[in-house]
Length: 181
Image (cartoon, rainbow, N blue to C red; front, side, top):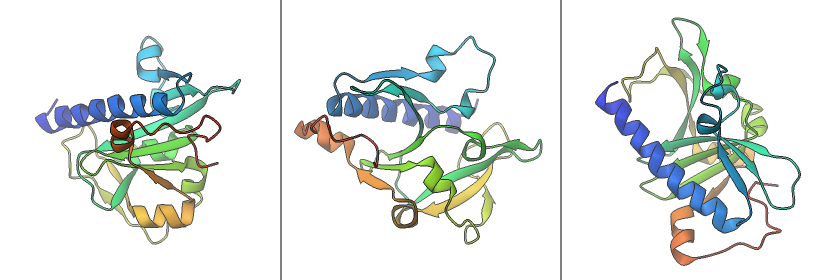
Protein backbone atom coordinates (compact mmCIF):
# COMPACT_ATOMS: atom_id res chain seq x y z
CA UNK A 1 0.00 0.00 0.00
CA UNK A 2 1.18 3.50 -0.73
CA UNK A 3 1.59 6.29 1.81
CA UNK A 4 -1.17 8.24 0.00
CA UNK A 5 -3.54 5.28 0.38
CA UNK A 6 -2.67 5.02 4.10
CA UNK A 7 -3.42 8.76 4.48
CA UNK A 8 -6.77 8.18 2.78
CA UNK A 9 -7.63 5.48 5.32
CA UNK A 10 -6.64 7.82 8.20
CA UNK A 11 -8.95 10.55 6.86
CA UNK A 12 -11.76 8.02 6.59
CA UNK A 13 -11.18 6.82 10.18
CA UNK A 14 -11.31 10.41 11.52
CA UNK A 15 -14.51 11.05 9.60
CA UNK A 16 -16.13 7.84 10.85
CA UNK A 17 -15.33 8.79 14.45
CA UNK A 18 -16.97 12.22 14.04
CA UNK A 19 -19.99 10.98 12.09
CA UNK A 20 -20.71 8.10 14.46
CA UNK A 21 -20.71 10.49 17.45
CA UNK A 22 -22.82 13.01 15.51
CA UNK A 23 -25.43 10.43 14.51
CA UNK A 24 -25.65 9.15 18.08
CA UNK A 25 -26.01 12.71 19.41
CA UNK A 26 -28.94 13.24 17.03
CA UNK A 27 -30.49 9.88 17.83
CA UNK A 28 -29.02 8.37 21.02
CA UNK A 29 -30.82 5.05 20.59
CA UNK A 30 -29.67 4.41 17.03
CA UNK A 31 -27.86 1.17 16.35
CA UNK A 32 -24.92 1.71 14.00
CA UNK A 33 -23.08 -1.25 12.51
CA UNK A 34 -20.07 -1.04 10.26
CA UNK A 35 -20.61 -3.47 7.41
CA UNK A 36 -16.85 -3.92 7.03
CA UNK A 37 -16.52 -4.96 10.67
CA UNK A 38 -19.70 -6.99 10.91
CA UNK A 39 -19.29 -8.83 7.62
CA UNK A 40 -15.53 -9.35 7.55
CA UNK A 41 -15.81 -13.12 7.07
CA UNK A 42 -18.33 -12.94 4.25
CA UNK A 43 -17.01 -13.22 0.72
CA UNK A 44 -19.41 -10.67 -0.73
CA UNK A 45 -18.45 -7.31 -2.11
CA UNK A 46 -19.33 -4.98 0.74
CA UNK A 47 -19.12 -2.02 -1.59
CA UNK A 48 -22.45 -3.05 -3.04
CA UNK A 49 -24.20 -2.33 0.28
CA UNK A 50 -22.44 0.74 1.65
CA UNK A 51 -20.45 1.28 4.83
CA UNK A 52 -23.00 1.46 7.64
CA UNK A 53 -26.25 -0.22 8.52
CA UNK A 54 -28.25 2.01 10.90
CA UNK A 55 -31.49 1.38 12.73
CA UNK A 56 -32.97 4.65 13.99
CA UNK A 57 -35.15 4.88 17.07
CA UNK A 58 -38.76 4.16 16.28
CA UNK A 59 -37.99 2.36 13.02
CA UNK A 60 -38.29 -1.36 12.56
CA UNK A 61 -35.98 -1.42 9.56
CA UNK A 62 -32.45 -0.28 8.89
CA UNK A 63 -30.94 2.09 6.37
CA UNK A 64 -27.71 1.67 4.42
CA UNK A 65 -25.23 4.56 4.25
CA UNK A 66 -22.24 5.03 1.96
CA UNK A 67 -19.57 7.20 3.62
CA UNK A 68 -16.95 9.20 1.76
CA UNK A 69 -14.34 11.40 3.41
CA UNK A 70 -11.94 14.02 2.10
CA UNK A 71 -9.38 16.03 4.03
CA UNK A 72 -9.87 19.20 1.95
CA UNK A 73 -12.99 20.80 0.56
CA UNK A 74 -12.76 21.41 -3.18
CA UNK A 75 -16.33 22.39 -3.94
CA UNK A 76 -16.86 19.02 -5.67
CA UNK A 77 -17.59 15.42 -4.83
CA UNK A 78 -16.01 12.53 -6.72
CA UNK A 79 -18.44 9.88 -7.97
CA UNK A 80 -16.36 6.80 -8.73
CA UNK A 81 -17.70 5.18 -11.90
CA UNK A 82 -14.86 2.68 -12.32
CA UNK A 83 -12.88 1.04 -9.51
CA UNK A 84 -10.70 -0.49 -12.21
CA UNK A 85 -11.54 0.63 -15.74
CA UNK A 86 -8.99 -1.73 -17.32
CA UNK A 87 -10.78 -4.70 -15.77
CA UNK A 88 -14.26 -3.19 -16.26
CA UNK A 89 -14.87 -3.26 -12.49
CA UNK A 90 -17.58 -0.74 -11.63
CA UNK A 91 -16.97 1.87 -8.96
CA UNK A 92 -18.97 2.44 -5.81
CA UNK A 93 -21.27 5.00 -7.39
CA UNK A 94 -22.42 2.52 -10.04
CA UNK A 95 -22.99 -0.50 -7.84
CA UNK A 96 -23.59 0.70 -4.28
CA UNK A 97 -27.09 -0.10 -3.03
CA UNK A 98 -26.95 2.23 -0.01
CA UNK A 99 -29.91 4.55 0.42
CA UNK A 100 -27.84 7.53 1.53
CA UNK A 101 -24.49 9.09 0.62
CA UNK A 102 -22.71 10.96 3.42
CA UNK A 103 -19.77 12.90 1.95
CA UNK A 104 -17.66 14.52 4.67
CA UNK A 105 -14.96 17.19 4.29
CA UNK A 106 -12.85 17.36 7.44
CA UNK A 107 -11.13 20.74 6.93
CA UNK A 108 -14.41 22.67 6.66
CA UNK A 109 -16.50 20.37 8.88
CA UNK A 110 -18.93 20.04 5.98
CA UNK A 111 -21.15 17.00 5.57
CA UNK A 112 -23.18 16.65 2.39
CA UNK A 113 -26.06 14.19 2.74
CA UNK A 114 -28.05 13.09 -0.27
CA UNK A 115 -30.32 10.23 -1.19
CA UNK A 116 -28.47 7.98 -3.67
CA UNK A 117 -31.54 7.57 -5.90
CA UNK A 118 -31.82 11.35 -6.31
CA UNK A 119 -28.11 11.65 -7.00
CA UNK A 120 -28.31 8.96 -9.69
CA UNK A 121 -31.29 10.67 -11.33
CA UNK A 122 -29.27 13.83 -12.01
CA UNK A 123 -28.43 14.54 -15.65
CA UNK A 124 -24.82 13.37 -16.01
CA UNK A 125 -24.20 14.72 -19.51
CA UNK A 126 -22.43 17.85 -18.26
CA UNK A 127 -19.96 15.93 -16.09
CA UNK A 128 -16.93 14.43 -17.75
CA UNK A 129 -15.45 11.16 -16.61
CA UNK A 130 -11.80 11.52 -15.62
CA UNK A 131 -9.04 9.39 -14.16
CA UNK A 132 -8.43 9.85 -10.46
CA UNK A 133 -4.90 11.10 -9.93
CA UNK A 134 -5.23 12.08 -6.27
CA UNK A 135 -4.27 8.74 -4.71
CA UNK A 136 -2.07 5.89 -5.82
CA UNK A 137 -4.96 3.49 -5.69
CA UNK A 138 -4.98 -0.19 -6.48
CA UNK A 139 -6.80 0.19 -9.78
CA UNK A 140 -7.39 2.36 -12.81
CA UNK A 141 -9.95 4.56 -10.99
CA UNK A 142 -12.27 6.86 -12.96
CA UNK A 143 -15.18 9.04 -11.97
CA UNK A 144 -16.92 12.37 -12.26
CA UNK A 145 -16.35 15.56 -10.31
CA UNK A 146 -19.76 17.01 -9.47
CA UNK A 147 -20.07 20.46 -7.85
CA UNK A 148 -21.63 20.36 -4.39
CA UNK A 149 -23.90 23.26 -5.35
CA UNK A 150 -25.31 21.15 -8.19
CA UNK A 151 -26.01 18.26 -5.82
CA UNK A 152 -27.80 20.62 -3.44
CA UNK A 153 -29.89 22.12 -6.25
CA UNK A 154 -30.63 19.12 -8.42
CA UNK A 155 -30.66 16.20 -6.01
CA UNK A 156 -31.97 17.82 -2.83
CA UNK A 157 -28.79 17.35 -0.82
CA UNK A 158 -28.34 18.99 2.57
CA UNK A 159 -25.32 20.37 4.39
CA UNK A 160 -24.52 19.78 8.06
CA UNK A 161 -21.53 20.68 10.26
CA UNK A 162 -21.21 17.65 12.55
CA UNK A 163 -18.09 18.59 14.49
CA UNK A 164 -19.49 22.03 15.26
CA UNK A 165 -22.81 20.53 16.32
CA UNK A 166 -21.00 18.09 18.60
CA UNK A 167 -18.93 20.88 20.16
CA UNK A 168 -22.04 22.96 20.78
CA UNK A 169 -24.01 19.98 22.00
CA UNK A 170 -26.85 20.87 19.62
CA UNK A 171 -29.07 17.88 20.02
CA UNK A 172 -31.84 17.68 17.48
CA UNK A 173 -35.33 16.56 18.57
CA UNK A 174 -35.84 12.86 17.88
CA UNK A 175 -38.69 13.44 15.43
CA UNK A 176 -36.28 15.25 13.06
CA UNK A 177 -34.90 12.56 10.74
CA UNK A 178 -31.21 12.15 9.96
CA UNK A 179 -32.16 12.00 6.31
CA UNK A 180 -33.50 14.63 3.92
CA UNK A 181 -37.06 13.42 4.30
